[in-house]
Length: 115
Length: 115
Image (cartoon, rainbow over all chains, first blue to last red; front, side, top):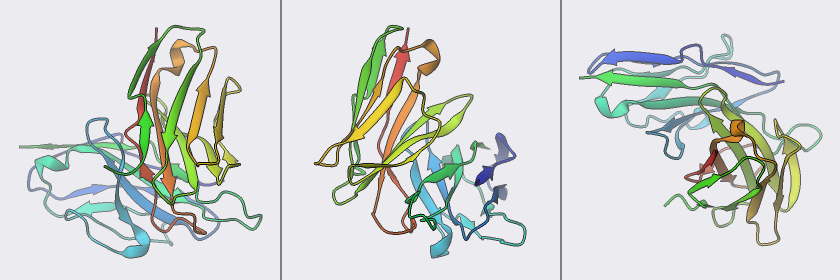
């Protein structure tokens, strides 16, 4: 079964410092990985998709299949980055045609950026 | 507006009662997912519907049930409520393609408080 692990429940950095939120996964197939952000218990918003290799709000994430990781990075954190961040994995469609895109989320990391 | 509408936004009810949470997916999305978010459990997948049919089931209690209607809106029914059911319940929808290239779009959630 697929599993997503975010080892840090809390992460604190100062403004301008680099930040890395860790995400490791276990899945036997080819995963589709995402990062979601949630500000102050609001709705979750898609931040990044690994497939698009994009950079949003200065954040990037690289899929490392050898280490089964998808860490989220930003070189210079801002106070407005303070939020809960979730890493998520989709198993896509399996051989039986089920699990049509079910997302499995990690436990989340609360990032606090201090002034 | 993300396009996913959840009602009501807040719900306070007593133990033993039954409530219905409603979700309207983004226009054109055929898949609807329900998640429960609590402080100690994080984001837990409950159930997925695709074009009216149950597609995947997660950690959903027998006291909970859901359905997706022909107009694609979905309802999550919670019965015999317990204090521990207090949580934020999110609905999400996705483009109906194999895999999950674009991630989910989340609603703003229903905050359920059981007293």
